[in-house]
Image 1 (cartoon, one colour):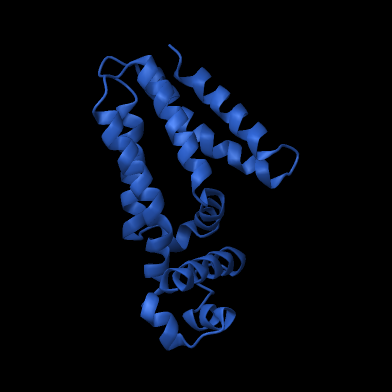
Image 2 (cartoon, one colour; image 1 turned 120 degrees about the horizontal axis):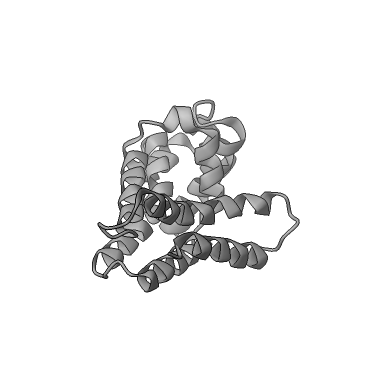
Length: 181
């Protein structure tokens, strides 16, 4: 029951933060939307920053898992292909698109949020792990863009012209082109 309430708080907060903006949304509004008192909300989250951290924590754990895997492998084309596939699968498993929309719409307000700083650092480390020390600047940038291209493809879902599966397959194909030598 506790986890269900926590999840509902996260869902409502994510929607309100995205629609109204992080700074314009209060804990009171989240509590009202949920149909509980502010005290009940405080039991789960003391601040809006705590809610943001909880939304990003799962994503951060996924990236740290991939980073540990990548560090344990030689920097080969096969490793890069597998990393792209694993990363794409992680994006499908989480509520990535909703969180990405929220973060994109609230960049200024959240620029210095500690959890987001950590997320950016881990993403940079992950892109670094895709290239060996002999990689040229062009190869390093291409490898990095492969991961970011998987994100960019998700924005096509907003247009509704392609199915989630079509977008998934197309973004992987584009990412693979970027990592090929």
